[in-house]
Length: 121
Image (tube, rainbow, N blue to C red; front, side, top):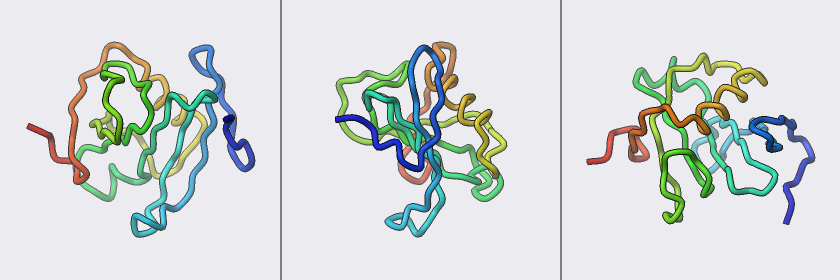
């Protein structure tokens, strides 16, 4: 089944088509999140806006798809990984592109964290 493209922005990166949108997550206290997914739905991530200025600790991204460079695709479920410090108060296509590029980068340190952003042991 394809991706619902209504109200979603399209971006082409790494020879793939991605769609992204920003919406409040009412199941998570209305926190505004950026959602990025590939056309084949193998790459699905969410990133909470304003983590850098609001949380005062390193931000993380939630990986829901099976495609993420550096992680084993056998695991099914949500995984959270620490990210670089991005200027994330306003979402722009440039920031979305940086996040996609970082996710597909082979030269990054991967630190898995729990739902509160604390490193897993």
